[in-house]
Length: 165
Length: 116
Image (cartoon, rainbow over all chains, first blue to last red; front, side, top):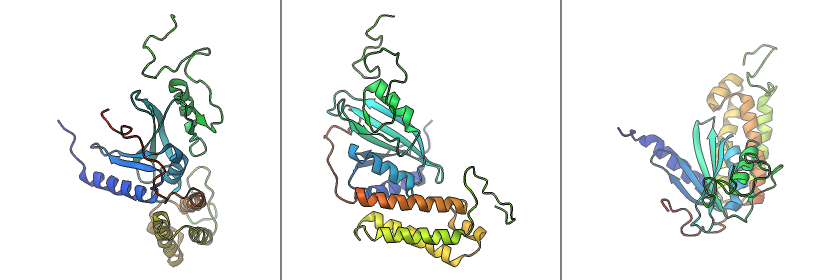
């Protein structure tokens, strides 16, 4: 069976996406709504803190909850890492995804001043991918072993690692 | 929220606000005065002024707290006050960031293509 299409929600999300894109044209490069009714904002990396603060504080978009902060590694691109923020609005019961890009050497502004929850998520992204977060209060390894070298989730890191256990 | 001398919002950490109309009036006037510093054609200024004026009119007309909460349809009055404070701090930061300017930098052409 196929999930039934929810046209009303699709239209509402499209309208909201256009609303945000109209207010923040300096940072938003693209807005898309997936067929499963998920709204995504594609951002320039300079605009992380303005966009996240806007989504948290504005009355029409009270996305107070940071549900997830991850990265995606696509080695063939010039900016290989795509950082993904998933936000949830409790007032309006809706979710939104914010995506940025960076490469191995460019730091990205930390989201910790905006959402305290981003602390450990950013430590995990640093540990697993090697994306440096500027102004993070305590950026150190969180999941790998103490003397571990390398960033395991990168696509060029082998499945069984470099060290024999 | 019951109208006895022992009141509670039911939310952890949010104290009951005495004289919420006054507080909201002050906050909304502050927001509107800060929005004057943004260029008139910016979408943020237009939409925020619309929201603030709507809420301000409702606050001016309705003097009963319970009915005001129902009309605003946005949770408790204390939550509305917190939201207004957030909007105020956001307006101050928007003046520094100026997000109404055109796009900072275009992405590389294959950046957002999916599937690769």
